[in-house]
Image (cartoon, rainbow, N blue to C red; front, side, top):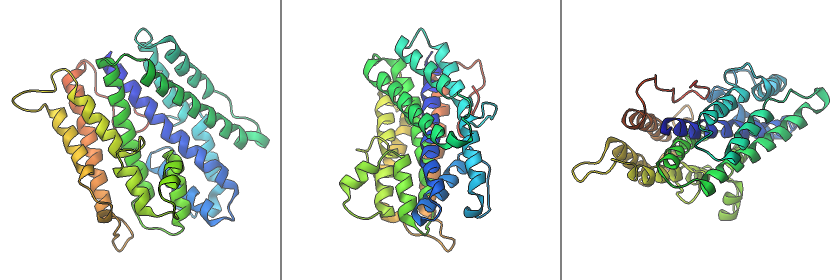
Amino acid sequence: VADNLFWLGRYVERVEPAVRVARAILPRLFQESELMAMAGVAAGRRILTGMGYISHDLEPLNSHLGSLEREVLAMIYDGKARNGLPANIHRVRSVGWLLRDRISADAWRILNHLDLQMSAPQPPEPIRITGAQALLDQAIGTLSAFGGLVMESMTRGDGWRFLDIGRRIERAAQMVDLIRHGLGFEGDADSGRLEVLLEIADSSITYHSRYLTSMQPELVLDLLLLDEANPRSVAYQLAQLHGHIDRLPGSRSPIRRAPESRIGISLLTAVQLAEVGEFMGANSEGRRENLETLLNRITSELRLLSETLTRRYFSQAGPSRQFSVPWAAS
């Protein structure tokens, strides 16, 4: 049960970033004359490619907007694609089905409804973009409803804790990928790129209310990576993980901390001691190597944390599930 709750949290959080990226790209595809919009589309394409949702394309963006549109729509509607949204949501529902006597009837209805939503056929040509945008909006609402039920209706026992640990590990991993593909290098038209990153991370209002200034990459990086007050940031996820791990059965010892506890401390300390200024310098190729080093460390330790929790708490009868690939099978 703990294993399934952990992976239910992982799979739910794995779906949301892809929905948000697709939703950010689609309306910008028709603004090809606007430099900021195209910078946002380029950032979105890079993120989806990095996460494995669309194929790698080295061709100039302006000449391949139609191809990008088709790939994004296929990601949304193609039920046969292993890396598509329908396949990932089917996995959410499958794990939810195994837990239907452990989660509330409302939570099960939400997961079932999400699966039905994303099984809808692609609408005809005249309204396919509008229909896709409406579908993605509905999916975000449904995912938010599930998150609300988890936070407001589940008893704070070990089952809930494993579910939320899964959510926090996955959200941290997805946010690291977002930062890596969106801020890991210097680029032109930064405002358009940064706007779309904040939109995907659901942090636009926070940024604009806090920083009454133009878009600055160091401020966006601080908000998305190091700000423990932002519930979408990497630091927030790691702080929540640290608190959950300390409350797991057997994780505290008067002699020596458990392996998962040490990993949690290492992850949280890494971001708490980091300074944004250390990460903004770029090499001759435009890559921010110091930032890449930190992100690689976080990714590696999140993977190690997942594996350590699996060995320590979950059944050893079956093979472990894949960490890094968005469409990993159960």
